[in-house]
Image (cartoon, rainbow, N blue to C red; front, top):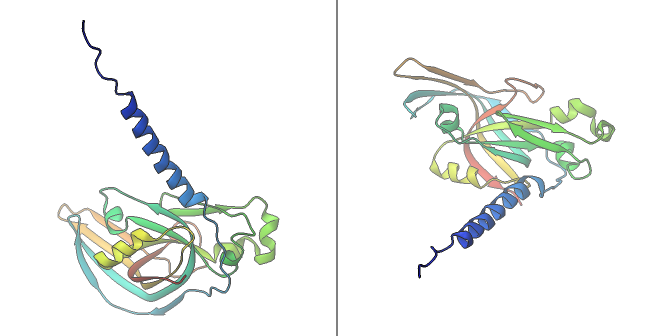
Length: 215
């Protein structure tokens, strides 16, 4: 009499449970946490100069600080960008931030935040809901998508820990990036220096020197 080969069914079930728990956690991390914080002021920036040079992914990267930058904000969304491109190596994570009345009303107004393609977008169930805080223009000028470039490994670890619902302060510099590899391929990234702009080029490129959790 021959024996049947052992079934792999329990293994598949176990793997399926692990994957389900993982995806539930990921979904909860972006959808399940909704927080509001009052009293957060505008970001602070002051003109500066300087030059930082790094070798990243075969590129000679020149980093030019334009302004010192300090932003206290509520984290409303996060997005990882894994991959081999220079942009992903420099900045593996984008953080969407809100302050002012956008952060204060983040629970009362049902904002739907989304990040993709290095952009942040938002929607509300009814645009009448944002009239009380100044309408579309106010919301657009009190939230931002931020490309976070860590200054060192310690800062990189902190950036990895940032999650939706955190109340944080980021300090560093708004920077422009100019890079070239040995084959002559170039990479340029320029930071927004205004909170009033929207669309392409409106994201802040921040060379991050520290992240502090406020509560």
